[in-house]
Image (tube, rainbow, N blue to C red; front, side):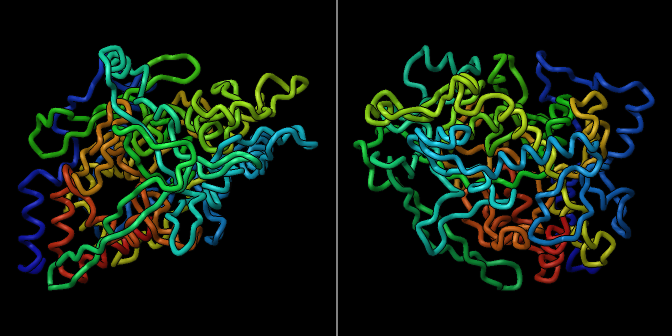
Length: 512
């Protein structure tokens, strides 16, 4: 190793950023298992061995190309790379997947309509189909150069104001509280004859950042506002948090990670002193009310893919399901005109606008969008970038691999070695990325570690490279440079690398 690089590598190692296994497992919760309940002692040893962080960067690890285990898609890489089903589904399950795909792409229409199995949209909404936000099952984008914000919206929420409200949050019965008029998110579309709630407005300020060697990067600092409000002002303490639709791949495999493996990486009090204090998100199952480990959403507010899907039906489309029976979506009592519109409930089909089996089919589809196979895992630059990724401390949060539980609900997800590059915990990401909005146990500076698998195919699938929760980063370099808080040390290590080394790390990310 050259002397000029040795100091750059040494600092993160001394600071504890290069930790190959958790030193102290302090994130356990008495309500969840602290050890794998699905494994016998022999299996447990196998799992510990195969998930141990590598120290050999001269060659790819065994099974590394198969990012999603046996479910990995080996299809030709093109614009449909995120839309293939898990490779290990049965023939019958492939049929179920295709039915779910049709419903995911389905364009819903306002009621009343002659297409009675498709009406129920709105009255206020953000999109007409799931696919409208999750473009080609991939990543959404901010409204660059146009007014199109279909794959991005503003979450609205206020903090608890009373002791009863604070108790509801502490008991995980409430994530936060909606605006009294506009509800949980700003709806920028409406059925004919009804005013929209408003429009999201975003403006950017360029911030120069100097990197090692004198290179200057420019970050975009966004400012968000709600304009053209149709029903009066927002409440004074309501926060506005932007969200772009995340990619859909590998969700069933994430759901199949055992709780104990995620909790083992949590250290909310930072007892090991490494500056990383990942916190587990706790939330309630929408149907049963049972307390579960949150793992989906930018703040891990949903425990299951079904919960995530039913929330999107209600909030994004204004469609009622058995899990969210509101036929008026996110309309509030203050929006009297909205509540006066007809609903799309057809008694002969069921009691909801999207009766069973709509939600189960969409859930199955969402659970089985396959992770594409890794590319160029043996390339020298990729291997160098991987080493730099590890040594810069990125793996302190972006955990490379897990083995899913043996007793997963779907056999296609069971006992698979997967490479999501996330610990699925909440981390303080600094003031720069803070949205000021509490979501359950996540405060206004905390975000779930986003999985990185498939990130290198964003441009191929979606035609852009906008990253982070609001798409402010125009490329992967900017995304890294926005990291702060617990990720500040890793961010600084990246910024201190020579230009060629930074490029190698980015090349590694592009291979994921």
